[in-house]
Image (cartoon, rainbow over all chains, first blue to last red; front, side, top):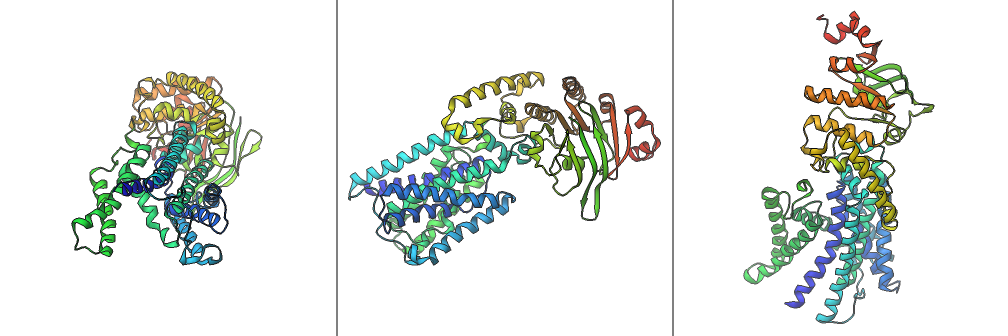
Length: 295
Length: 252
């Protein structure tokens, strides 16, 4: 039970990095990024390939994953930020699917659908001790990310991205170029997603293309909507809540033994979907309240 | 800084919303543009400020041809606009709205933000002082910490004026600053505009409220069906028969 709880917390901490990135992109800047998983995937594969076939230290793979994910965001930004919000959403969704298809078909590098097994653990060993160390490591990355996040939010940069979210034309009319800010926000979110992917690969120990379906992106969306859009506390609480629903429904099976494993997988997604619907009806601002109720 | 428009046209499909307008706005003057609904006034503004990329003609500011500049590039040259429907940053406070408008902030650069925090802090302090002056000038003190989205229509117009002032403009284009504003606030806004004009800032104002506008401006341009119908001193222009027919529907 204890090991299980630590495992859930580690996965939560990995997802928090994704939620923070999306909070920056959507909650503060208003960018509808439906391709978050693409950057997560790039980070995971960079870490996986470099630490296995590349025999590089884990840290190198993590940093490379962040850089590659951030780099991948630049062309997306340049092309897509000229588009209207909804088209941007579609382009990013297309991007993440493209990443997945490239990884599926470039078998010489990624081992295709077979995936890459045997990715070294962040910290070797079995049992509670190493697991706690891993949690501490990912948790430390979370703390650094939160500190950087707060620094950005409470700065002129943070003020400007919120202004862009509220009215982009007014920002242009004041002599500032919204695209410059949006590209940076896209890159920052991608770097966080890349790091998250690297941690994920080293934690799970195995990556394959079917772990990077668009559902991952939408899980992160669900987390920030349930927690409260545009708030750091919303990202943290929402991610915990999401994991509660995803993992908690596993225990449901002990209570309802007549449900098969396959049915259970569907019920999990159904449970999260129901929670999302209930939230949008009864608490649209999320648990922690969203940016519209700040003052 | 002189604003000169030469042969400005804007087409929407087969419809010419603005049809061959040429006019010059002398530096530091107060100029009004009137015309019936659909005359093309706001379209002209959007074309001049770069928000309509498909217009034809030459826009020049001072010596520079700015016809190909981006909207933010034109604003940086000192020509800023407001919008017919106020575009406040609804979820920022009045104070934050004004601070966001200050130009050239190194805190908007992530590298400076993390590696030159002292510089960013000093700039913020300077901007904050300037914002306090603007708040006092526009009498927005009571709502300084209120989300801009909660302001009344008139207060939003004041805030928009304050925001463009923070950019230190040479020429301000106001799109219907008096629309939906109560008479007391109209007088106040007019007073602000006069005071700013005396400091050398030029204004071009689109307005339907003829009485408030004609008391304010020294030159009035009349647009009708995308064309310039008349230009001159307000009293002269408003006395013209063709203007009265176009604007007042021939009732006079």
